[in-house]
Image 1 (cartoon, rainbow, N blue to C red):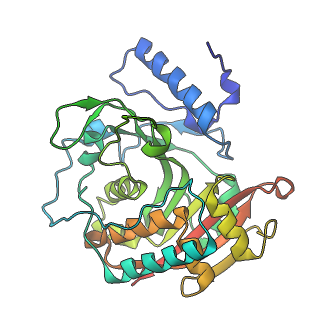
Image 2 (cartoon, rainbow, N blue to C red):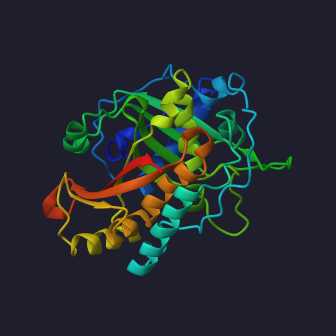
Length: 333
């Protein structure tokens, strides 16, 4: 049996249990989640003072499941952009070609996501864990320069059994997590830690929920946070892809864009317009790809938008290389 002291685990991954669980079940879930976090999550600089609470703007998905009605809007099959795994190496040429294709999709438009309602999250086994008071100190220079704040921290975890559309067969959870900060006032989304179902649940015969992509899950949370001010949904203007894993193929593309390994500087870093080859290459990585898909597949509510520039910068200790980050600016297409 594996025993891990809780002092070794990142504080921000300690999740509040749903209120309907018994203490025994909670303990079992906590142990599973702690071990999962220890084995698969890199450390971060989130302040340890964050206190998990039920945020009034979101609450739990189960609470909102019946309160949010499905919208009556035309939908189609989500745009079939070529799938880009965050673990698959890509050449510079491939990154540039991918970025160019994404720019065309953002400009020309495409069919919209089939997932229309916040209630769709519960149908695919996702639960919400909003947290008040979470801060990320190493983004302060960037946020101060932008006149922005982090906003609401929400961890979406795929922790419940789920059924695929048209089937009555229940499948076990994948324990995927999508963790972001959302600030509708400043049009800002910070992608903090993300591990999709394909990464957390592998092997022969594994089944993933229909609603599994970062772009769809993050959009539904964003739209729910904006529900009291519908126009705010269209105000999405800024994305941070924070703490990019050091083993991610994105790192090699960033290094080439800035002139070599060890050349990446802290904020304000190096900014590239997406009308340049380097800007297209950064957009074409897995960390730019999700943002583009967010914009393409939700144009019916966001309007037609495109990524106009990408900034690469470093946070953390320069002696150890720190963390790589991308900042993506969004404008009207």
